[in-house]
Image (cartoon, rainbow over all chains, first blue to last red; front, side, top):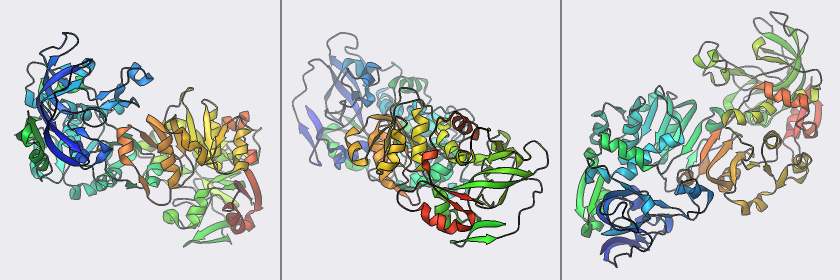
Length: 316
Length: 316
């Protein structure tokens, strides 16, 4: 089967052996999505070698029981040891010996087939089309913010970054609270505007210092971090969503004096995300920029870095 | 009256006019304590000019009503505008137009007399001696941690830094949870050991990565911040207590991937601190290194920077 693989920072579509279902479920991938994390992994982040990709929708082709057989599924990407306290509390996302689909010790989704434990798979509601279902994982990450901190209806929220993650965070949080999305790209901001979300530019937001109860950093740039601190009121909360590559300089005195909280947020649960997709509550459609055949995966990865591009999909 | 004043980073004891009570209470200072913040202010931090010092115990000599007249008091250091939502919710600590005793726009406690609004003053219980009461403000700051985050009996807590603040944080948290104090100074660590607190050195703690639910950074050094992150389990909480001077480099990806929370904590309420002092629950006595007359304030400030020194007291 074809798979988009990285080895020692070199990216290539290779013909590899189809995996054997064994104790896990074999999923035929229908569509996969390129995430910024894929781009970072291709540059050497996390030292991963193997098939990349962790956003997908597929069909279960082999499984030890019939529960999801031949059904459309999406899959939670963390696979825990099943024995540690975290796994036993049904949250393997922080299991210290976990593997992560296409990120840590486990071949990923930019391939014709992938393996995941049956319990990681979630059936896709019939009315959610493949092109939307493939957003379940990143949308779950956006929904994960509210797992980490309680956001109230009267909290003033700013989201920094108009990339895929920022657009999804803004849309999710706008369902409960007034949101301001800060970004540099008019075409991207327009997606949020069409959902009634107020938008502005980094330059124009400078006058709104200390106005926000919650700021979500989803730009992935060190300047976004500093801006987030500037926008927060005392005792405000800064939600860190994007994994910065390098170390970031922070003004620790500001955090102490104004008693700011910084809250790291990574993966979220799939059920709330699928529910939002089913309701049509989030516009993911406008975020699809281009689609390529898996065989053109290397080119697709280049396109994913281009200016103005949001989501690139791969079809095996 | 005498007052230890800073002007354009120059420190001197000066003879200045005794303040007029007016709408506030006039307090005759009995003892004041030198805090590391005083040392930073003398170096130019916060751009403050005036009488420094914010830790004191004194006696109310003039007041608009008789409530605390001639009584021993300590005083909350933040004075809010009284009109903003924060002040109206009885928490002026983050009022945007607040003054802060000896730190922002208000003469401080290293003086024969000081002014504070009557509502900032709290009577000192009879059995708490002056030399202990003068620790109320910094002890309240240590108690402030539990205002900012809920610490449970089975939370494994590490405190980094064996200075005054670290020793108080360790003792306060050890009242509810198992605490490990990390420091470099055997004489200082011994104060915690005598209260049954486990201690170790930065070198020896390196093997205990990801073991702690809560880590309190009270060393004020950038290396302490990095160590704190290393010691935290996934989803752990880092409480930032010390105001770093400069910007600090942080590994933001670690915060996101492991979903760490960073919680800034500054001032605390006085009532819990006075209660602990009354019960003798905290050993502040061992933290008194030297006492000087206010007239020798400049020399006392030099001594406060010396190696092995903990609290220096000034007596007007």
